[in-house]
Image 1: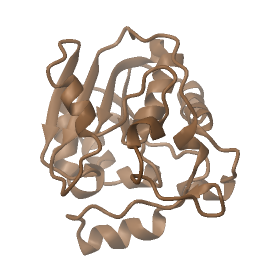
Image 2: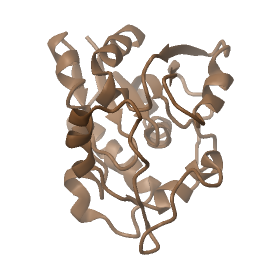
Image 3: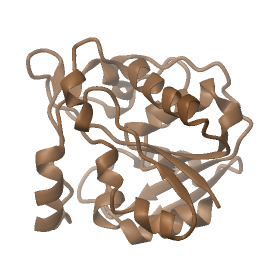
Image 4: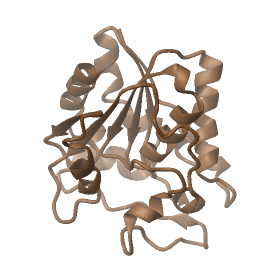
Length: 227
């Protein structure tokens, strides 16, 4: 049995993993899918002060109060920034760190260091980043579910630089690259870096950037395999 904890992507929430969670639970695993401050069911807590450290603290508190141990920590997209910070602060709770088409920051790096010009929209009201367009393979059913639930994301989360104390963590790391994309692939830079790295396990998934929405069964199967 594996204990999964998800650090979800930007503009999203724990709700976006509702198609994956029952598949893993039916196989005997556990899965926690908390939502960050200012998003999802916690959108009412959004403020200009919310930043990357806020979201790291959100997940750290879930781990502490749930007394979660031996975790397969999954960071999706922006969640790779969050998961890296959480794992650095609580390495004794992590069994494996999985980056799902996610950013992999080093010490002193922010998401904006990787995204480059034009990859993130300009803030609304000076501090809220509107969502990226949906994946091209999203079905009408997917869009009906996700579109009304996606929220603008506090801008400081994207520009705050992460501080890492332990650059060589004691747990194994996995990178999963989603390959079914049209146009520019922001996450290929990480796939190219870790594909042949002997310190990492590397896998591809024939899905677009949010397989938790568009390919939940394939994602659940791969997460069971890598755990």
